[in-house]
Image 1 (cartoon, rainbow, N blue to C red):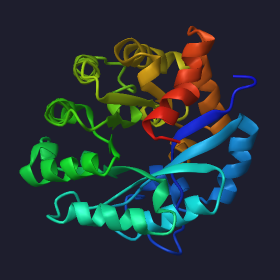
Image 2 (spheres, rainbow, N blue to C red):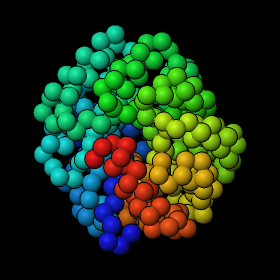
Image 3 (cartoon, one colour):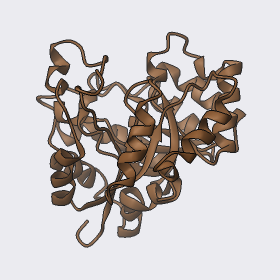
Image 4 (cartoon, helix red, strand yellow):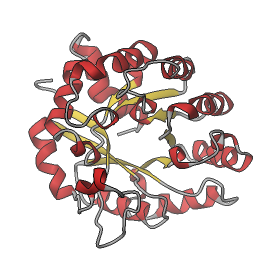
Length: 283
């Protein structure tokens, strides 16, 4: 990617002195139980040739998104924010309008909810959630999907039901890389990719396999599947920093993505590493 500026379309920051990250539990996640700030990230992005990023929500509290918008307004690095609001609220359209009016509100590009944590695999299809998705589209925003493979069929139905809304699949829908299985994930992700209003992030892969022994070869069948299904112009790179640090450095994640897309043409790789994110998130 020499000579090109990479866009990292998926990373997080948090300060535990401001707010707990209650999902960081157990010994495996213990390395994440500290502050990860933009000051920590900036040297990593600079060294990797990353010039712009998309900051993505981490927890479902209303205070986080305004803080992220304010942070985006203070730095050149963050080009957009994917925030959170309660989609089940009847006044969600008003909430989105209020977010847009906040300091840094012009950086709001999308909304995300931890659907992966919802016990109902068809949560996205609840009438109140569907109303919320309609409001997200009306606000000119996209919707990031953080889901598990068994929730992908509901994602397909939601995207079919909201053709006016762009759905961005985070982390390839968390395929079972550790087991090496492709089915039924591959079929389900192809069904989603068949819809024109869907996009996929090449992100979050190193933590879906063995964090100590993973190789690029382990990831290749899954990346090849989404490359074929979505195509480079609907696929975008994201680091998933700092979660990725459980298994790899920032530089290693960028390097793995470059190796996994080495068979693409220069123009196709430019789409994956910048063009798609620039279009989808209007950076």
